Image (cartoon, rainbow, N blue to C red; front, side):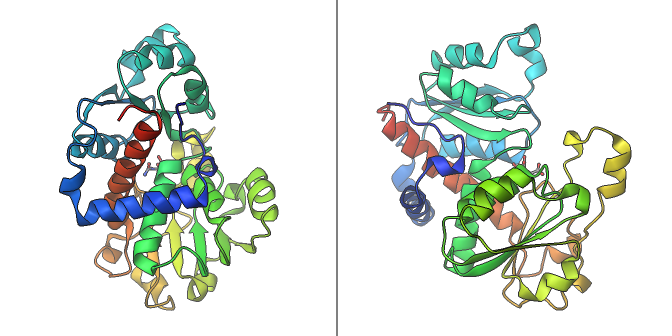
Length: 308
Ligand code: NCD
């Protein structure tokens, strides 16, 4: 049976724990894994722009001894001729052993997974989900804080369209005593379906505010996000909202000394570069952790599919 990762909740907490343990072992002993995906191919199907996600998937597969095929611009593929996502997935199943797909339409990777005969990984679907960024975020929190429970996390910026936020909130809903503070302009609040289906359903304590500085002293983790320009219907709204929050050293003056500052990147203006050298800045560590978690994920899915 092939197993895919479309939503972070597709994996149990125990499975995520196993992935975190594999990732830590990969950090300690990368050579042990250098050939475990030999002769296996990853196909990266990116219908939307990406730097980190696509290249880290590719680097991950290469570090496992496998190889990579794919595209990063759908304009040059048969989808521009009208081919369906299902047909593309069936075709790629004849060429590769595993797919990582990013698509602007919510649900497209699920459609692909239903049609493919190989595992499909959702590498971001519209403003919906981004489960592999969440795996990276969980490893980052675990490595920085030594735990994924009993802490307060502030999500700041575009909580409406920010798919990394939706997936991380889903994942954290299963850990003990995680308090969530949602910091955004009114227009970019967390969608009500996430509040209802995830936060309320799991009795997660949360607060909504527009004021980052007022809640700063409470935070153990601050998750900054970019205002998602590509999801806006008109540029005027984007321009009005894009610089709603800019984290500067001065705004950190009342923050905890062990605050973990995260951002899935790319950054536009949300975090001043003056913060990059602050020991609390963890966003470039997240990039490294993402590659490692993608290695652990590819290995898990190929093993479960019986390909290795
Ligand atoms: C994020 C994404 O694509 O959702 N980027 C990433 O994969 N690290 C965040 C963003 O684009 O703002």
